[in-house]
Length: 277
Image (cartoon, rainbow, N blue to C red; front, side, top):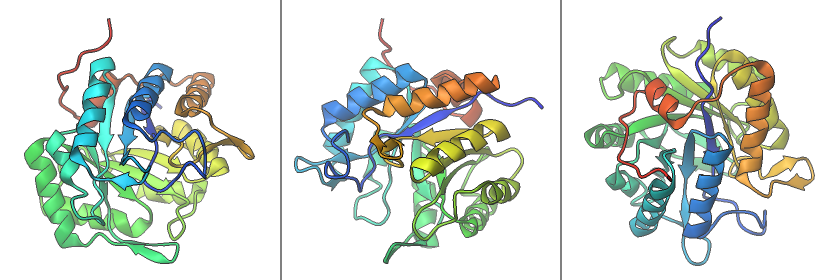
């Protein structure tokens, strides 16, 4: 069976962890930029980015995002994937920076004692906004019902092929991170669609990375999703988590995608960047 190059994506810092959870969490714009450049050097093709304010709290401040995007593009050509948090006012303002990829929630789900709410009218607006700006939606899937929502939007002509699904398994309230679940999800999407998998939690992160490599999909790792490298041992760098996936891919004989490969596979338009000499 012929498989594509493996796209390694990284959840750099997320919007929930704090320095109390891990002292290695990138928070300042300089730390975030450095972390993205490091994962690029380690073999990652895409980076999913949130920003924090001066107190370390999640922020939608467009200036902070612009600072990170400009800083990354000055130093490497990694595919930038920005969050669009439809739960917060102004969460989709990041689209003004025209990232190549941005997160697109596949619908609503229970999460711990609350709800991550993403109603279809809002998702329709988000899909139109992304298309107008040339941004590729990364369709975030926490459970199987979200696939149907995304396919409905595609049938309405709001999402363009090739679709790009991001299976985030193990979220409290979402689908479990096990092989049977992943196989069912993969079988539920169009054959021509691209997919990536991420396991939430240390053990799940390793297991799902191995499954993604084996099944011909793509893989996301990162401190956002599993701050530990091994149970009881925190990852000191996102790049550590990337390096492990590149080693596993090499053992399996699967080539790792460059950012250019990722752009080809996902159907992206190459941005203007200034790679290092």
